[in-house]
Image (cartoon, rainbow, N blue to C red; front, top):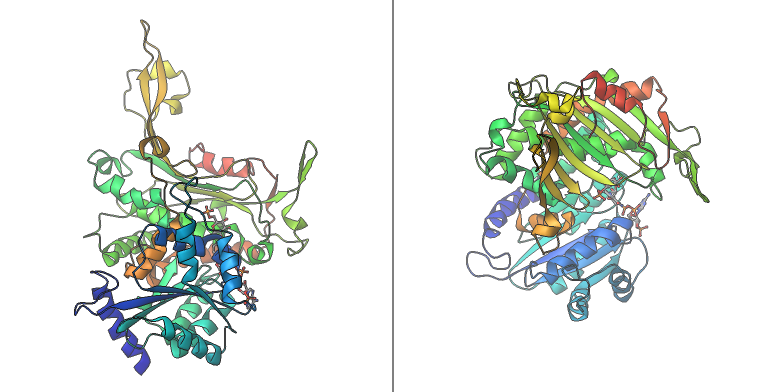
Length: 513
Ligand code: NDP
Ligand code: BG6
């Protein structure tokens, strides 16, 4: 408890420090930030974390004094870690540019310490090594838990007892999954809080770091034209769509324990929904924003079984290529019923959104890769031009599309007169296409989130009450699906997914975009 109290005091002091330069405190003392990637030998570390840290270094966003340590059980030397990391670094801003000098400088700051995740002794050794690189009076420490969830608590226990900062802040980034239902999530939170305060825990949902997700609030609250329309009065339905054109390749073992609802809907899509639907926060302060998100989540109706459709991909042959079924993965049981696709209808029981269906759809091994928000507006009352659309009046309604990825864009479908002497109407897009408008490459979500964690900015991280509210919505229906062993609808790899998703949407008068 004493250690916890000390960390709490330090974390308050240091979040004040971070308002200025990260490397100098109020008294002009220099400090170091040590970043330890726990699970450095793994997929996420190689694919995302090290490249993001390099991009931050390349952009001069990291503090002057920083050290990166890889920690995992695999035996590796510093040179071997550098060699491994160097393979995934790119010059993000301009890939043609030669940034070898910067890469060498960055790699020179990367070190490795092998150790067990539950060994106080190994973390104490790490502590010693970190100290050797720490410059200045204050040393701040960030641990990134890029390891399977069953060892989160062991690693946190050891890091906080044997390797936490003695004179600066200690923060821990925790990767999903945060449990697999309300109960296990609460148990994880309780265990983590034995060693860390809520302020020290940075639960990551990398979708919150995506450019267009961050832009949602800007779009809503800094343009006069959107916010007045943002309610049941003008919006018919909202669709949150995630699809990938590849299967669970290589991650079947993890995935089978979770399924697409836990992997994508309960976190990534629900977070987007909360930002989309929340009321205006009092300020841009992290707590004010997270308060509003919690309110939305708590106003939502628990999801009903009849409002969920699940699917699983089966093999499909196209030309000479045979695409595998989900259950062809050797780490997946042959009789697995785990959904790789799901569609669901959600409702927010508050004055703004009463009766508006929020439809989510998420799937792997579909025909395309995309993540987008589609907002379908109501019909124009007494529309003078209805006859131009024949019986297909849906075509006449406006639709706002926020394409999160790939090829980021925001476009509004409007009706327009086709130029010419006749009176023919056409649907056209007012289009903000990011690649055409902005020449600079968009940073990866992990870059933004790592930088925020270093700066103590919590806005894009999940607070524990948000997590509880998110699990309360999904846990009952997940339990029902699993207990009643509902069979998923099988869909061919590379298809548009189960037809049941269309029936579900049609029940609410919706056509998927
Ligand atoms: P890995 O399975 O690659 O594991 C990371 C490292 O943890 C491994 O290199 C291994 O290192 C160690 N490890 C693996 N299994 C065990 C085990 N059973 N017991 C002890 N140590 C083990 O995971 P990822 O890198 O894919 O993911 C890390 C975390 O990030 C997970 O929580 C995952 O859910 C999450 N995540 C991953 C994403 C991805 O795209 N990969 C996307 C979003 C979240 P060593 O043997 O050297 O100790
Ligand atoms: C992760 C999921 O959280 O997000 C993966 O576990 C999924 O299954 C990934 O592939 C998608 O992220 P992105 O950024 O590639 O869309």
